[in-house]
Length: 391
Image 1 (cartoon, rainbow, N blue to C red):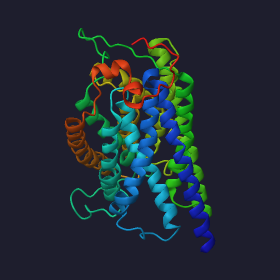
Image 2 (cartoon, rainbow, N blue to C red; image 1 turned 60 degrees about the horizontal axis):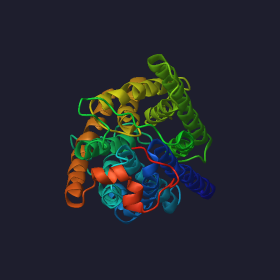
Image 3 (cartoon, helix red, strand yellow; image 1 turned 30 degrees about the horizontal axis):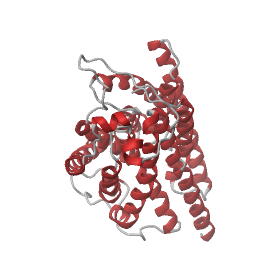
Image 4 (tube, rainbow, N blue to C red; image 1 turned 90 degrees about the vertical axis):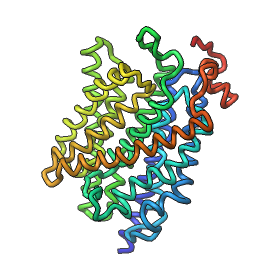
């Protein structure tokens, strides 16, 4: 028993460490996708999110989510906390990436506090945690969501949707005649590095969510989970590559990588419950959804520089439904109910929170600030001071 405790504690700490690799993953991905004049601000925001969200969750959110610090005894409570803490910043990362190049840092930090202390812990409470909705019509504790297709990715996606509706598009993104101004990525090598750091981090994200590795059965479950996670990412990348070439006759590396991330989000709800072939289909659909939805959101004038709505919100929904479709023991109606309840809770709370912050502190940077670059106006340090900015 003591050896199992030690092994599972180490496993939780190791998984947490892999998940923390997603911090530089998000940072590099976003830094590569924005213009050079906004790179420092993106990096600053990512560091801030990890620090502020983690501390908010430690001081307030964790006990609210799980009821106490002593709710399980299969591993060190400190290791379990660190594993759960590693998740919380990802919700804000999803939102912050989608409003890059037009958001001020201090108001975004205030929203990060709200997410770490209240919004994300509320969703954890009703799914993985203490569950204050237990016994009510809104009880969704039966929803299958191993590592958070809905709990994390859709939560971040709903918050991003609220933010985009409130903040609007970047200066010059959409022309008055309806044309879309293409704003190219500034550093494709960083985008590639960031995507692969996220991919590697996902092995801890999903594998660690199995919760234990100290028995043969648990070790097999962890290995299957990580294998299926990787398979879905591979499949999403391939489909993103093929569909992008079919539609545009070009190989767009950003779409290929987002296709992989879409597949990874989609499989996150149930990688421990699939055979080794089902994730091929789940990831393929995830990659296809990214390719289809990125231009749809553009046509709706919803400016998302990193494609986070398509990757996280759309595929968070798809991945949660997929468990109900492909796992006979799981009801698709239960999965659908979980998606709806989380959306109904998160979107209005996030909307009111962001709207209030924007009114008081101006979350959105002004047009002149955007033209100059958030690096200069907010940080005073440019990532590439020798580069000439064209727009």
